[in-house]
Length: 186
Length: 96
Image (cartoon, each protein chain N blue to C red):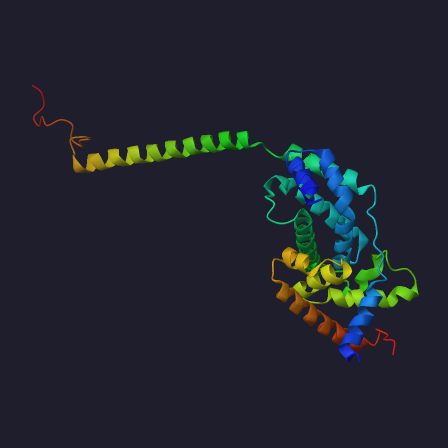
C-alpha cells in the first residue's frame, strides 16, 4: 500500500493529474475531517483541504520518502490547520465584528439537534487546549491513529505524545467539569 | 475499582465516538484542479530565471568595472599631474 502511495507521489511530482486524483480519493476524507476537528467549521475545513492538496501537488517532487506518505499528508494537514487558525484569530483580533470562540461551532455538520450539544461543547473545549496537546488529542482520539504515527506526524517521541495526552485529558477534565455541561453517568 | 480520572476518560472517549465522519463535497476536486492549473500557468520556468539572473549579473559587473575604471583614472591624475596637467603650456613668454 505504502509503495503504491509512494509511486503516486512520484507521478504527481511529474505532473500526473490522474495520480493526483487517486491520492485525493484516498486521503481527502481524512484531511477534511482532521481539518474539521481543528476549525469546527465546514467551509474553513474545505479551504484547508484545498490548500493541503495544492501543497501536496507543489511539493510532491521534493518528497524523499523519509516518512510514510500518510504521515507526510497528516503533517501538512496539521500545519495548514494550525496556520489557518492563527491567521483567523489575527484577523478576528483586528476585525470590528469580533466573534467569540464559543460561536465557532455553528457550522459543524456532525451536530444536529440538541442531543449533540454536549459533543459540540466538548469539541469547543478541545479547541481551547494548547496547540501540541490539541494535535496529540485530535490525532489519537478523533482520528484514532496509532500513537507511534502521532509521534511521527508531530516529530516527537512516543513518550512525549503520552505525556501530551495525559496533560490534555487533565486540562479537559478541569474545563469540562467547571462548566457543568459535561454530564457524567454516575 | 476505577479511579475518577479513568471514569472521566472513558466517558469522554465514548462520547467522542459519536462524531460522524463526513465526505468532501464532490465540487472540491475541480476547484483544486483549477487552482493547480493557475499555479502551473503562473510559475515561471527555471530557464527564464537563469537568463534573468545572468543579465542582472552582467549589468552589475559592468557597473563595478566602470566604477573602478573611473576611480583609478582619478587616482592616477592626483599622483601624476602630467597625466592630466592643469598647465598645458610652459611657454611663459609666448611664441614670438
